[in-house]
Image (cartoon, rainbow, N blue to C red; front, top):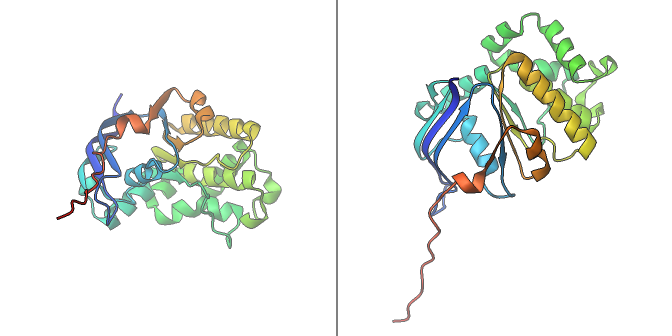
Length: 236
C-alpha cells in the first residue's frame, strides 16, 4: 500500500529558539490508515500537524505528502496543495460565524476546483454529509453560532470531508466533548473517512482516545530534539 506521508530527518525550530521543537528521524503513514499521535500539552503536536498541513515549513529534512515534496514548495503552493488534498479539523473548529451551516460545509469547494469537482452535486453532497453526521436538517440554513459545541463539531467534520480529500488532519477536536459524545463522534469520523478512502492523522493528549485507533504513535518516542544547553556562568 503506498504511503500518504513520508518524512525523513524532519526538523523545526521556532524563531528565536536555540533548540529544535521537533526532530523526527522517520515516519510513514500508509494510504487509508488511521493514525493517533499521542502527546502531552506543549509536546509539539500542533506544530507537527501544521508542518503536515503546510502551514509551517521545516527548517530541514524532507516531508512528502501524496508523493509531493511539501518541503520544496513555497507558501502559496503549499496553500493550494492543502486546499486540494487535505481536510483539517481544528481544535476550535474555525467555523465562520456569519455563514450558515451549509455555507460553512461548502467553503473548501470555493477555494479548490479539485474539491468542487470531486464533490459533484455540491448541494446533494452537503446534505448527505450532514445527514450521515446526524445534524438535523432544520439547522442547515441557520448560522453556526446557533449550534451547540457538539453540533458545530459535526459541521467542522463535514467541511473537512467534502470533496473527498485524501488526508484528514484533526487537532484535538474532541477536547470539549463528554465520553459518550466523543466516542460517537469518532465512530462517525471513521465511517465517513472509510467511505471515501481518506487517511486520518489525529492528535490528542487524551489517552482514552488511543483505543479507537489501530495505530498509535507517542510523539515523545519519535521526536528526539537535542537537549537544550544551558550556559554556565564562570566568575573571572
